[in-house]
Length: 185
Image (cartoon, rainbow, N blue to C red; front, side, top):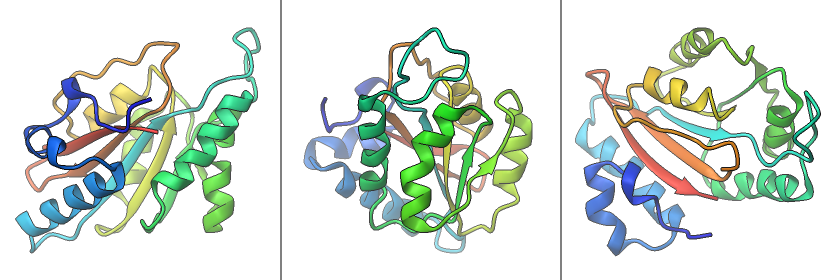
C-alpha cells in the first residue's frame, strides 16, 4: 500500500503539494494548517471519513472484522495520532463499531451510533458539533460517498466492495464547499 494520496481524488492544493510531502501525517498537518491560515476568523473543524475495515466473511449479515481488518482498525489510531478527536460516529453494524473500537478505547470516547442509511441524520449531528471539533466517521462503501457529498465534497467518490483503507479528511469551508485530502492507511 502506498502512503501517497490517490491522484484522482485530491484537491488542487494537495495535488500541488503531494510531491513535496511523503509522510501522510505531514500532509494532514499541512492541510489543516493551510486551511486554518486561509481563514483565520473561522474555527477549524475536520472530519475523517473511512469505510469500515475488512470483514471476516462476505456471507454473514453482520460479520466481525478479519485479522486484516483488526490490524487496519489499529492503523486508524496511528493515522490520527497527535490529532484531538472529539467525536466518533459508527453505524449499528458490528464492522463499523469494531473498526472504531481501538480508537475509542485509546481516547476514552463513546461512539455515537447512527443508523447506516440515515446520512441526513449523521450530517445533522456533525453540523451540531462545536466549530473546532474533529470527528471520525466510520461508514460503508455505499454511505461514505453520500457523507462526503453532504459535507460539501465536489468530487464523485466511488468505493468498490473489495476496497478498504481509504481515508477522506474533509475540512468544510465557509461557503459550504469543502477541502478534501484522501489518504490510505
